[in-house]
Image 1 (tube, rainbow, N blue to C red):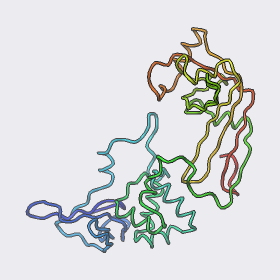
Image 2: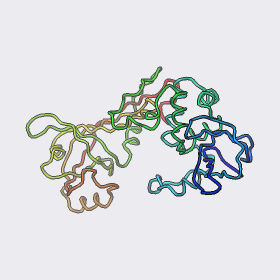
Image 3: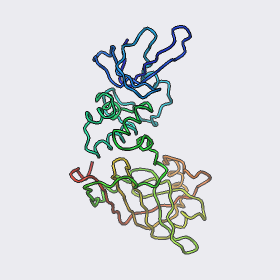
Length: 302
């Protein structure tokens, strides 16, 4: 019998095959994965040293991952074994541990798991069992819901502020890099009724111009013929850091048929709002500014 951290130990009835007990392997005592194992039982949350008998078998984590739907986006590659590729839970665990000044060893001791398993959770896209997640939450003074990202529906920025933040102005070159090729940004316009409005749009960057699709007569279409502000940002709630880029410049409607067809061909995504949106608006930035907030001591540009 051989196991890895995170595998499940399943104990079945030798006569009926019914699962009598199962638990997550949170500690190994031999490098080759042979017994005994430290197991956190799903029914009691207790961790015990187990020498599996003939009625027990290992349910490997890799097998479960192979059966689960892939979360890898188009064009992405699975990380090579051992390459840090943390999932959302692992990233939140690692950041909360660092925020509280706890070592892996101390956190693992508090959660009653092995430091090796904690390293696996933090560095790989692991899905720890509920009991282990609860134990980690208790060790870190937070909740399992928070470690799972339970606040994703709340406005960003409700996380803890950095103890020693660093706020840097971004150079124009860095602003252009952060705008990248496409994403979701906000355009500030004056509505037909004269009131100011800020509207989210799916945008592309083509030949240094910010372009987006909309419907004729819609609120975003009101940007055309005016100088407008366009803003895009990224907030990392787990790391309490982020950046913001503001572009200011004249907006025009793209009317040349060849240019419109070219933009449609180069579009990376369909507008999230759906529907027919065949009017393209182009913003030529005359001013690009931005700011980035990071922990003091970390390089401003990564």
